[in-house]
Amino acid sequence: MSNEASGHTMNDQSPAAIGRASLPRPAVRGVVARLLHRVLDRIDSGMASGAIETLMPDGTRRVLGGRSAGTVAGLHIVRWRALIRLATGGSSGWYVAWDKGEWTSPDPVALFEVLSANRRTLGDGARARGVSRRLRHLLHLAHRNSRAGARRNVAAHYDLGNDFYAAWLDPTLSYSSALFESPGEPLAEAQHRKLAAILARTNTQPGDTLLEIGCGWGSFVAIAAKAGRHVHAITLSAEQQASVAAKALPNVAVTLTDYRDVTQVYDGIASIEMVEAVGQDYWPDYLAVIARALRPGGRAAIQYIVIDDAIFESYAANADFIQRYVFPGGMLLSRARFKALAEMHGLDWRDERAFGADYAETLRRWRLAFDAAVTAGRLPDRFDSKFIRLWRFYLMYCEGGFRGGGIDVAQVTLVKR
Image 1 (tube, helix red, strand yellow):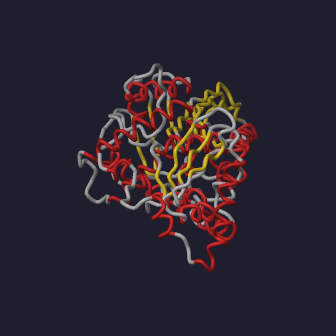
Image 2 (cartoon, helix red, strand yellow; image 1 turned 90 degrees about the vertical axis):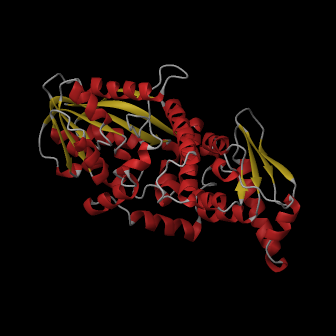
Image 3 (cartoon, rainbow, N blue to C red; image 1 turned 120 degrees about the vertical axis):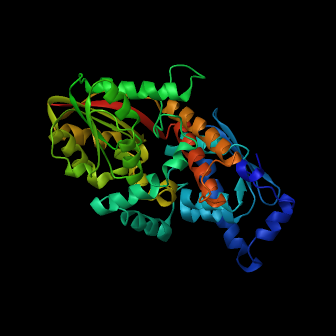
């Protein structure tokens, strides 16, 4: 794999030379230096566990944290500008700095893991601040998931093309966390276990009707139809709708339908990592549809991603790297808030099971498969090197988040009272 493909940037200059070349003019150097050291001081003071062993642009070394056990990550700040981008742009700025080669790490996943593990004590240290924060939040609000906005947002991510996702997902084309039973288990087997667990949670029988909200490329639809369910699958992605329709599965109807437009009543509902595309403003609408579309006593099986409730307010008031560059309009759940809303809509919250470590492993497998597809030239030609770097960063960023515990994935059964 090339240095570019591995996410590392090589530079022929010494660290000291790089630092001299990238420092601002003397007239403002002192002010900038104080700002940058405050950024590092803030990170250092927020490191409750683990450490970041940092090589500075001038060749000096500094350990951030290191006062208690935890993950130890390496970081080379190639140019001082990387810290300016972090201070003003948060995770979005940190991505831009990585893309421009202003920082590197021998293992970015470990770096994201240690930052995730220290999420509560770091506070807003890795989030945009001041005017930049307000502007990013306004930009995120412009991507609200109204009917028209939801279609645009879904198309921006899922309509990148079936050929793109097929190049690195497992054969089931499941773009959600697998459920592993043992180390080394093939990813496709772990994905089938996840899908079977969702079907079991619906407590439906052959001949019963199922609604799937957000059907992806049809992995769940296929096993539900094989088990004798009559499935109505809905999506806002034209690419996904075409993929499912092409399978010509018996007793399956797949339509381009907004969840808010569902009017029928079903014996059960499944929704696998779709609610992250709904947005906080529309959680009540999503849960109202589930309550309305379930028969009394019916069950909805939901797989969802949450962010630590302790940092949700700060997260929701900002727009992070994923919302800015990967999935416009996306938002992870607050478990406490979402559960309270479900209960308000007459849906009992039962049998919750979290498995964040499995998502970290799923992402690791995807990253390896993605890199293999890049190396083998199997990605469609329309995706340039900048897009490839973006997606590599995205996969590493998410993997580290799950490994550090800042985000988690779970399944829950909602039972209509």
